[in-house]
Image (cartoon, rainbow, N blue to C red; front, side):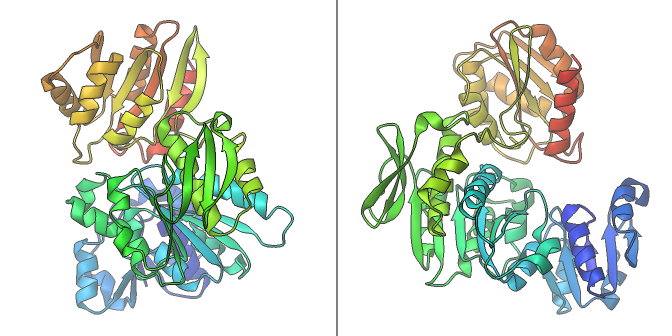
Amino acid sequence: MVVLGLARQGIALTRYFAKGGAEVVVSDLKPSEALSDAQEALSDLPVEYVFGSHPPALLERADLLCLSGGVPADLPLALQAREQGIKVTNDAQLFLEICPALVIGITGSAGKSTVTTLVGRMALSHFEDSESRVWIGGNIGRPLLVDLSDIGAEDLVIMELSSFQLELMTASPHVAGILNVTPNHLDRHLTMEAYTAAKCRILDFQSGEDIAILGREDPGAWALQDQVKGRLISFGWSAPESGDGTYIKDETILLRLETEDVKLSPVSEVELRGEHNLLNVLASCAIAAAVDISPESMVAGIQGFQGIEHRLEFVRRIDGVDWYNDSIATSPERAIAAIRAFDEPLVLLAGGRDKDLPWGDFATLVRQRIDHLILFGEAAEKIADVINSSPGPNKIQSFEICDGLEAAVHQARRVAEPGDVVLLAPGGTSFDEFKDFAERGENFRSWVSAL
């Protein structure tokens, strides 16, 4: 079998099949020296490597083609494999086909990592005194395929799923959550129709015995109601007009199940910043309810949860200036949500690589809300053009374009004043300068810590 891409998921696929006795060939477009760490991680296994290209000859011995997360499903070699009758799959699809445990799958254009982590906290609290184990991973953290042999039928799996993984799916999890569907990854999917179809595949293979969770506040997610084959649980600001779901009333998070309303947590106990994160908490409670996690465990998961790394993460205070890392904000919409989480004067660091997404709403908000704007990366000039051409008021006091993120950090240090917040909310991906958003966030923290 052949694995395309030697990133995190590719390594998991290679280890799974090689340990099972399969003959594995791994191909990556990068040169060998750029992937020395990955090769070292697999050094105990008999693996053949092809670097620098994906030659058609790879298919001569292949009975299965597995794609790592960053590899497009319409890659020429993948299309050629299908034409030859070779199955094309990925780690998430394989996991769902084989996993003996109940699986919760969570997807969305934004918030899925936060929700996956928070549902995991709730589940860990619920099963604290049980022999059942909770497994958290997928597109976040650890690819779960490597744990498959240890997962039992009584366990619970909480799995983040990206649109890249879902577009190959022919299986759905028993519990499937779609938080929102807004423009994202259009550089890969090209159209919103294709992107929405990829997200919807998490529901496509469910049965009447399965459960779907949809966000009522997001038109893209709520429009998928007709695709739900089993039970629907929803989440939103006000009480659901029908069915089960979570909502807020009198500054309290409530869960409605069969017309009975259960009080969960005061809104004041949610430590995450921003309305978008409050929706993430509502989503997490709705998903937890789908697998009968107790209200007490939901509250225990919420309490003390300050978010995940690189998502509105407080880094440090320097001379009265607070620095926040939101490197995971890889779309303009997510950067908008980050900006709206603050009332303080803002110094914004934005840029990276564009995903062919609209920047108009971002530009309008930046002109209204940002005191000092610092752009960096490949998308800097494009973002600057949109901001400069946007109508309406403009309160930006200073506007700089830097070669990279490190230079942007030092520029922010020069312009920030006591009482300000310096916010890294790029709006673009990290791939012009870093291997992923996590590496970008880690470098940001290091540079800020060294100031």
